[in-house]
Picture 1 (cartoon, rainbow, N blue to C red):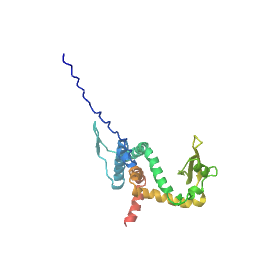
Picture 2 (tube, rainbow, N blue to C red; picture 1 turned 90 degrees about the vertical axis):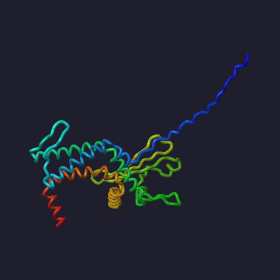
Picture 3 (cartoon, rainbow, N blue to C red; picture 1 turned 90 degrees about the horizontal axis):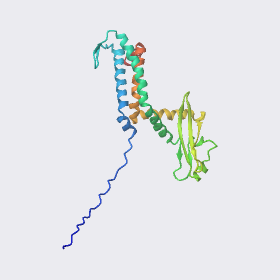
Picture 4 (cartoon, one colour; picture 1 turned 30 degrees about the vertical axis):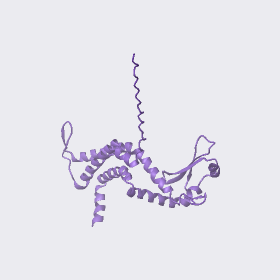
Length: 244
């Protein structure tokens, strides 16, 4: 009896596909991808522009087409007040969607400001640091011990009401499980110069980083449309003074 032939096929293993981690979107990309934010921004912008047109040019809203019916407006004064209330409501709704980006924008420009040598400067060849941030470090923070034990030390800038400005210090050494936080005011000696840098970096952020205008421009347009309706004659006189 003939031996049964056994066929053996060797299949090479399929290499596992390399899965790349998802790329983290930048702040500008996340703003552009936020559909809820864009919808509220567009609605606030359109309503604000309509109220501006009524306030400055005397435009009239005759009718509006809805999904159900066509609405005709006869009381033009009532339309303006309706738009006024609508803008106030839309500003609140827009703020609900834009609030997380406010914190990120604040963190971004304050970090740029604190990189200025006036606030923090590191010697290029020696382990020495300077600047008012380091000069205002509280006595309870032992920087040498933190460096020796490879602990953690960082600082940030805080703006409070009534023009109060502070440096917030967060630190922990290798033996501590919890971080400690302490806020120190910038001091009257450094106050004017600090406000100068604050104004400089906030203003420059509007011209060099478009995400600031993407988030803040709808507020400015909405507030200006409300003021233009309330103080219509005064604003027109001011504009005439610039053009005359």
